[in-house]
Structure formats: C-alpha cells, structure tokens
Image (cartoon, rainbow, N blue to C red; front, side, top):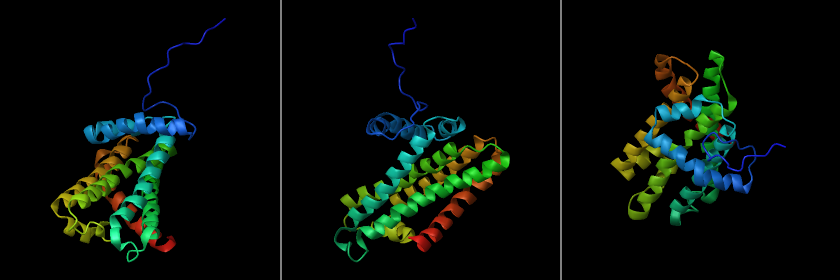
Length: 228
C-alpha cells in the first residue's frame, strides 16, 4: 500500500493557488508578496523576467490580488490625504473612481502585453495579467510615499497628486518627482521584461515598451473619464 510523503515542500512563487479563500490570501500577503516585492526592487531585470517567463499556476491568483490591493489603496489613501477638503474634492466618490481607473490602467497594460505577444504567437493570459499587476507596485510606491510625506509635511499640497500629477510633483518637491520618474521607468522595465520573456527582440522591446505604457495611461484616462 502506497504512503503519502509526510513532509510538505516549502512555499514558493510557483506554488499552485486556484482558490481565493482567506487562508490563501493571507498566505500570499505573508509569503508570496514579500518575495515578489524583493524581486521587483532587488533584481528588477532578471528577476522580473523570471517571474514572467514561466507559466505558473498561481500567476492569475497573484495578479488578481496585487491588482485588487493596488486599486483599494488608491481608493483609501487619497481619501485620507484629502483631510478637511473631502467635500470640496468629491470625497470617497472621487477616490473610488481613481481606484477604478488605476485598476483599468493595469488591465490595459496587461492587454497591451498580450497583444504584442500574440503577434509573436506566444501569449499567455495569466502571465500578461501578471504583467499589468506588477505595474501596480511602482504605482503604489508613488502613492505610499506621497502619503508618508504628507504626514510629515502638512504644508505641502500632496493631495493634488491624485487630481493633477504635474501640479502634485511641483508642490511635493524633488523627492516625489524623482520617485515618480523612477516608477515610470520601472513600468517601462516591467513591460520590456514581459516582452523579453516572449522572445521579442531587445531593440523592438526598447521602443515598444515606453510607447505601450504611455498609450495605456492615455487610454485609461480617456476611458476612465468616459465611464467613471
């Protein structure tokens, strides 16, 4: 009679997750998310490439949780940052729309990656969704930094970042501006590594990646204004 192994393997980024139960979500935040964040910031080239190059059973799970978390943060943190100006700035209704537009942006980036890879004949929906989700990490970095800066610099109009990014960068100073630039370059890098994982030429990826990111921002803003 066969016996099952008593020792379970250590969890990794490739562990299969097919349900969205409480235990699976908590496990993601405790184990998978810290490893993903470490990969994105410590090994932003080869690490991201490895995350997106292999088809993994948990890619869809990871993508959905990251995208949902990013959208929720964009709904809640800007609302807290409004302070006494909530009524003037539209309150939670405004930040709720901001969260939806951020979610739409990540989805569009994922679709853009899928479209480019479809031309090469190597698209994988789960991995392309993860491409868009990983873009939520640098987007969240901008938001969290703005929130922290506002806590220690009440005289800066950090809330304008959510309403007017250019004005927000000017009022928040060089730090927010540099982090915004870094985050934008990170978005381009994530998209480029996604194309690289599908054997798209480096030269083509170099030109397509910034165009795809800028087009995604444009489409998200236009569709967001039209539907939200």
